[in-house]
Length: 239
Ligand code: UDP
Image 1: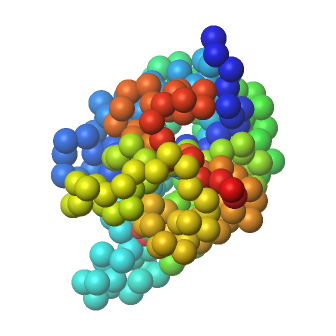
Image 2: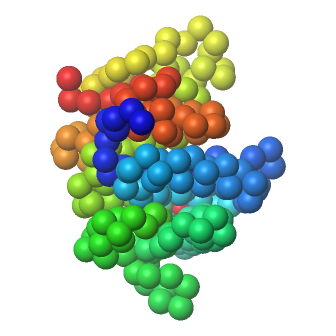
């Protein structure tokens, strides 16, 4: 078994990555595929925390654009992340894995409330920690929630599973000639406004020296490859 490049990892997956070929909502088969990738990382000896977005169900900005109060709309988005987290917990538990949803917003009859100590305790016991409800605050994103939790839990890396195999100079789906990078700095992302994560998330990762690794979550086995410091990905560090 090859050595791991990172021991404790926070994996951020967008809500859309759970849709499979649907246009909305949760495709449990796709959740299962991501869960299998997470289990492969556990089996390889890593500690795994997850943050799942909510964009497959609701985004606050979309509600606000249609005239809703932004705070209420963001609360709906936050609740969408809890639904996704519960789906992942259920699928992992059905595979015999001890997984715990920890929500930034207290809902004690549904799941545990997030605290750093509780999260680290679960990780140290080999459980998958699923951090739900983002930061718990409107006007933020789950990318920022992921960077925040990665800093709190002293994760060795923040993995961002996307629909493409790294960071490009422009959206490769719209610009087939866009340049792909193997390595970038936090400053590259911020100064060139490369829209891979929101700037608050990148700034948090930079300030806490957490490497950000961007790769395609659609490629089965990619998470384990990246965990081993291999595979096709863009790694973002200080230099
Ligand atoms: N959200 C929020 N605060 C947070 C995290 C999420 O208000 O800390 C809301 C926001 O409305 C956002 C939605 O939840 O649009 C879903 O999260 P996100 O857009 O990050 O999901 P993803 O794009 O990763 O699926």
